[in-house]
Image 1 (cartoon, helix red, strand yellow):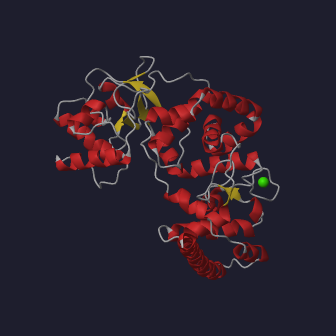
Image 2 (tube, protein in one colour; image 1 turned 135 degrees about the vertical axis):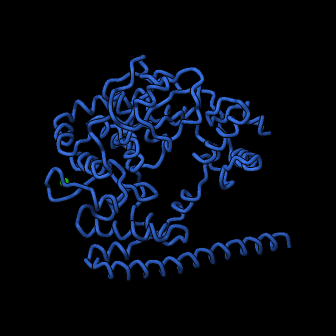
Image 3 (cartoon, rainbow, N blue to C red; image 1 turned 90 degrees about the vertical axis):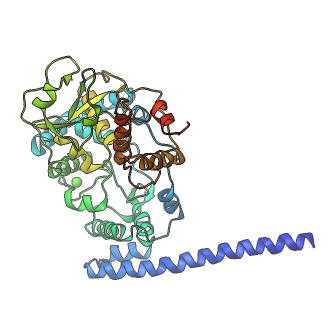
Length: 399
Ligand code: CA
C-alpha cells in the first residue's frame, strides 16, 4: 500500500512534467512556424536560413536566466570594483600597445580614441576571453516565443537570420550571451546588421574571430551614436562644502562655467576647462563617494548600455588604460546592499510621505534616488539620494 501511494504520486508528478514538456514542444513548434513565415516575408529563404530555422531549440535555461531577479541592489563601489580591476587595467594597457597600429587607424577613421575601444572590449568580454557559450539563435527564438518581449526578440531573431544568410558565421559558431549579444563587443544582431564592419576586408563581418572587425565595428557604432572626439566622457571632480546635492543627476545639465561658479573643480584643484559645453553631475555613491561631471559622450556610452554605472566604468577604465591613476575619492566600501523587500518598503514610505518614488517595484533606479533626495532635503539631511543607515531608519527601514 505504502509503495503504491509513492508510486502513484510519482507517476502523477512524472505525467505532469511530461504534459508541461509536451505543451512547451507544441507551443514552440507553433512559434517556429511563425518565425519561418516571417523569415519568408523578409526574403530570408536561403538553405542556410531554412536549416537554421529547422534546428531551433527551446531553451529552458534562457527563460530561467531571463526571469532571474537580483537578490540585492549592487552598490556603485561593488560594481566599479568588480569591473575596473588592476588586472584589467594592466591587460588593457598591454593590449593597447600590442594593437597600437590597428587601434590608431580605427581611431583616425571613426574618431573614437583607442582607450575607449579597449575599455568597451574589457567590460564586454574581458578582452575576448568570454563571448558567452549560448546558441544565439536558440536564445533569441526562446525569448521570441515567450510572451513578454516577443516583438523585440522576434526582430532580433530575424536580424540573426540575416547575419547567417550573409555568411558572416555558421549557426553552430554563432555563440553569445543568453540574451543574444555576440562576439568581442557583444553586439545584438540588429546592431551587428547596422554597424558591423568588415575592416580586415576578408569578405566577412566577423565579430567573433577578427579583432580588426570588432574594434572598427565598435567605433562605427559609437560614431553613429554621436561620439564627439573633441571631448572626454567626463571627469572626476571635487565639490565645495555645502554643495546643493539636489542638483546632481543626469537631467540637470549646466555649462562648465556655471559648475565652475558653484565651486566645482578638477581633482587636482585646477579650474574646470574653459569649454562651451554642458555637463551633468553624478554622485553614484553619495556625498562620501566620488563626484563626476559627465559630458555628451557619457550619453553616447549610455546609448550602448543604458546604465549610469556602466558608463562611469567605461570612462574610468578608459582613463586608467590611457595612464591615469585610481579615483581621487574611492567609493565608500560600506555602502548598504538592499534586498527587494527593503527597496519596496523604501519606495512605499517615500510615496506615503509625498515624495513620488514611482511604482513600488523593488528596483533601485533614478526615480527612487531622486525621491530619496527630496525626502533628505525636507529633513535637512545631505540630499544625496544615497540610502545610508540614517535616512533608512528615518523612513522606518531596518537593515
Ligand atoms: Ca572581416
